[in-house]
Length: 154
Image 1: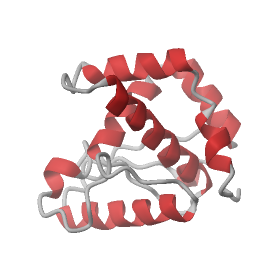
Image 2 (image 1 turned 45 degrees about the vertical axis):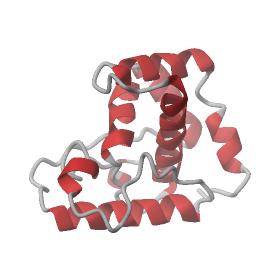
Image 3 (image 1 turned 90 degrees about the horizontal axis):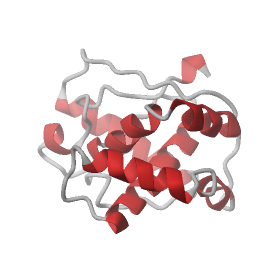
Image 4 (image 1 turned 60 degrees about the vertical axis):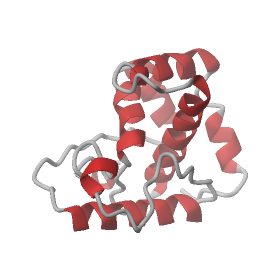
């Protein structure tokens, strides 16, 4: 699948306002200070991540904050499955608890950020730590950069 620059607009429409509000409420349980505005931006970053993952030929890893939204979305099984189907196939969430090296996490995030940008999506710095981040365990991924999509199962 080729993702063009006008595709991002269409993909964001796949999550209706009601589901967006539910995802924000779900994430707020583990991130109490999450505002509605920042939550909407988080859903936006989740959609960019998943849409790009659906067409990528390498595993992509979410940041900690994007992963919070992904975990919330996966729990809404029907809308999540419908969203994935609209992108061409189910996007599996693959935890890898053996991958704990900060360097691996930074490399996975750099690859993911570059792939998302190349697909025409804007990266929100509130949701993606900069490449210069020194404490990857705090910002990179809920699963120590081990959560990824699975291009093998697409």
